[in-house]
Image (tube, rainbow over all chains, first blue to last red; front, side):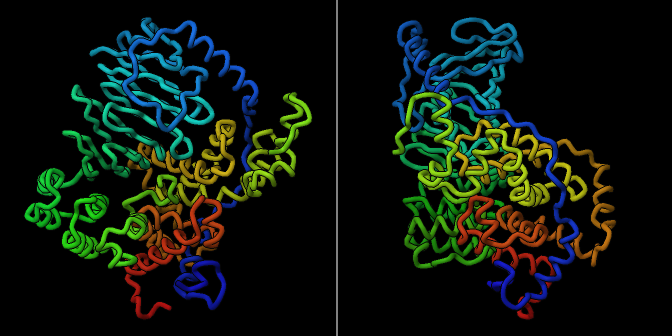
Length: 330
Length: 201
């Protein structure tokens, strides 16, 4: 790459200069608008509130249902609860009906029946809409992060926060927010379905991680984590993918999938590259298809062929199969 | 760990705000500005706007019509500053702002009425002093067809005049990632614009 494109040094690149001249008229040059700053709650106030609520939680609040989940990731810091707003029907918050608004405290359950729904204000970082027939617990909330337990049902999440500050625990998976809008659904068997509307989410299950981007879906099924796929993927592609999820060594299914793959399916192909059970021959075929789709060559073909994680991750970021921001997901 | 002279709130805050405390935490200059801004320091706010407004604008421009980008970028900054108190890690400011900008741009696009698209053409062609309005429209359309990672860095570089190192610092990326995205993005952009790569330097 020319130095000029990188930092404007060295001999000017005529094409870059022409684009700068053409596009420079759009450069932003407005002064700062009027703004108001809200001062943060002092650290000592957080600590005092946390201690007081921890004591109250131990002494006064019996659990509705025992958690089956180990406490992982975000510590169970006790903090102020979240505001609950009734959207329809009569949701229940910690055993009490929510007529208009309520407060969901840490370790309390929000339940909706078939005709009720609610909206949660997720601290100061976003909102969670709770669909009918949902069981949801606020597991932790505080300066170190926020954690929900979705036992069953569906939620629509919208978060504006640095990555990994918001986590949703489900019976067989964990969704780690990397920013910013998605739907999570858990069925009666505890299987999860994630659909991302904007941004990225890391879905962790059964020792694996899937990075699910805008417009994509991923699910768990039969004690396994699926491969993320584009919401508009063709039927042929999805049929082949289902077969490959069951048996990554299915060569006919791989051939069918690669034939029907579009550029929008790059993330699926990348996850297949990364799958522990993909063979070197399969990786060759997948890498060739990615190149055939105009996504460029891998940075280190031999390393990609043998499934080297770093080489795969580098290529994944380059082709848009992973978040472009540098990884906090390692 | 720095010893605090007394366990009073004012003393703790004074220690937190001192340059020595920033140095001990190994914080960047931008993180220092964020902490000062969180305390209502308007000079720090102004400096943050100067440093980050172009990044915000480029992220927004990657998703919305040029005619809307300026106003939306300002709205993003106002919205973010109103929530600055929720940012616990000042060093994550750039990534945090980028997320807010992307959200706002997506919301704006979803709310947009189809007939407003006609204004976009005028917004690109009508700029005073444009060298080539047609080329700008072509270039923007071509950039819009690129993957998101390339789109944003190219707009930061070609529209906002940010250098690669500056893009890395503001957006919270490694210089290596930015370099690769700029190179690949420019290569694809040349292809989209029908520029013969063999003729390009």
